[in-house]
Image 1 (cartoon, rainbow, N blue to C red):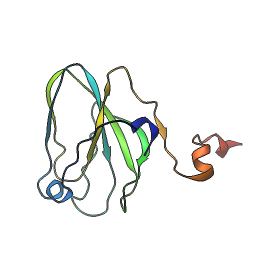
Image 2 (image 1 turned 60 degrees about the vertical axis):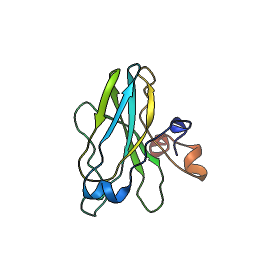
Image 3 (image 1 turned 120 degrees about the vertical axis):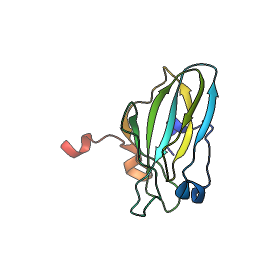
Length: 127
């Protein structure tokens, strides 16, 4: 898991339910925040929810390794104080947690293990 996600409290949904009916998440915040949601790609129909296109920013590519799933891309979205909900339709996704509105993670590709982790930028491609 990307270090930026350490210490966050996520929301887990049953994958079977999410694939069949979708999983709607309701929450209430005391102050404005950024919600971080992980999405993965899958060739299986309805296995993965589609990432949103409007007002959501991909910030961490390959940020979470989870079993047999491909790496999750983490998207962030500004959420106002008060009651809100997330509903991406059928397919699995994971709410990874909330950050203060001002704490937007720096967009980057996450590498796991060995030399790749020590060199998490792509500058080496152009050397």
